[in-house]
Each structure stands twice: as structure tokens, then as C-alpha cells.
Length: 130
Image 1 (tube, rainbow, N blue to C red):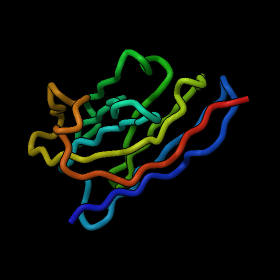
Image 2: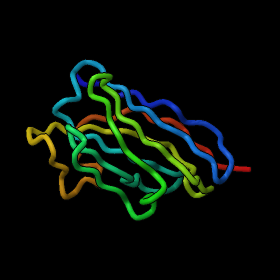
Image 3: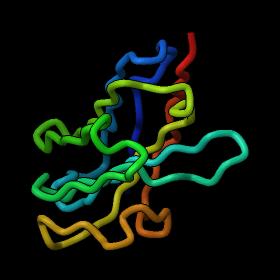
Image 4: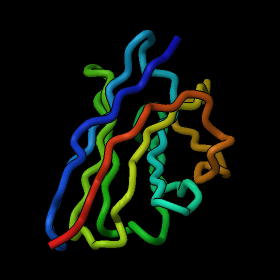
């Protein structure tokens, strides 16, 4: 059973940066597309980015395009989300999620939807505040 654990969250000032990590155990990530989501209080979970199993295809939500970068190191069973130019509205709990896909560079057309992913971590809190 695939398990995901996020880390790297914390308190950062506006304009600052954080790098989130999503570490998998129980299975290799070689055949999983990974997505990053976030959920702010009172809001729905929002899809931010997704990366195909080999890293050749990446998707970003408009809200983070140009500021966030997704990457992966399958040898370390880890996916990263580099977050730059953080804003107070980026404050949320950040989750990673996995979808088993046999095509190595495929990302679902609905990559931004929670229903596209079967496995979820418990999240890490990111707070952007001065």
C-alpha cells in the first residue's frame, strides 16, 4: 500500500520561498503520477500541479504558474514542490497525491481534480505572513 508523507511547510514572509517534499513508502513511485493540492480554511481542495511518472509532463494551475515548480527524484521516491514569491493567499495545508498510471509521461486531463488520485498524504501547513 502506497503511503505519502509531506514535509517542508512552515511560516514564511511574503515574497519568501519554501520547498515541499512528498516522500513515498510501501511502493516505488515509478508508475505514479503525483499531484500537489492545497486547502485553505473554508475552501475546497485546489489542484496546483501535477507531474507524470517520468517527469516529462508537468501541469500547473494559473494561480501558481511561474511561481511554483514541481519536480521528482524517483531514485529517492520523492516529489518536490518549490514555491517562490509566496503570497498570504498561499496560506493553506498542502497535500500530495498519487495516481497509478501505466503511461510514463501521461497526466490525466483532470489532473486538478481530487477524484483523479487514489492515495493522499496528511498534509503540511504553509503559512505566509509578516
